[in-house]
Image 1 (tube, rainbow, N blue to C red):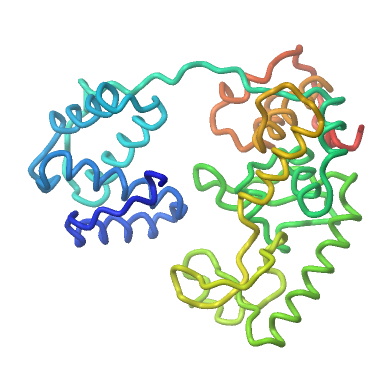
Image 2 (tube, rainbow, N blue to C red):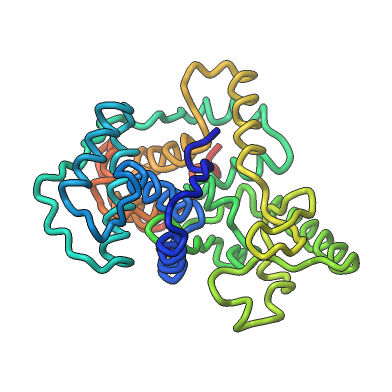
Length: 329
């Protein structure tokens, strides 16, 4: 069972509810909320259910040391635990725990991203079909993360300007990236099918979609508006775990991940790849084509240029006009 889905009922519910409330007010993603709640519970239980108000820097260091030494967690996991606890003290408890001068952030090992060659992308895509191929095409052709692709709504696709707006991506930021000409017509046909499916849902008494933040209250009719519907809806109606409403969510991660695994095996590509490999390949191929590093930084939504610099395999050249690498296949 995944750690993030483990429930620990002995943690004081009042503190956890406060934590959830603040996270939602600050528009953190549901996945981040689950992770932060999990680590706060683990922190409290590790110190025999002492309230965090009674603890500070020393107890935080003890917990992090336990994770690193006894549980041998990865650097990213240890840092996630620390971020969760710092968020609790700063935003919920409102207690100053100092500069955490003795708290050492775990250093992540430097790893170069796995990148596919253009020929490997062609070979991989020959093994994909249907919605999975379209989703993979957008992840490679637009540089989308998997969750960004899954979370696309119809209003986010601008065929006129050939661009995609990504809302509330990593770091709670919005950005605009390129819409591949290669998939423009196919995406238009797909969206027409989604619109037809939406009409069927409405006729069957469904058709509402989960809205971000408080939009459902501010705009009561928006949940059934076609503009807010998912670009990649799930095949079945299911109960929303938060509201209890029966509605159609977006496709699950497992669908495209399974399709990618099967395509990799059939293609014979001898690399450890996944959905995020397509985003890495997008950035690297743009650099190879001579596009400016800062333009690529904006398309990827990186806050720090150093994050984008990992893709610098060729000399930087000028160029602001963007043509998706998939359009050259």
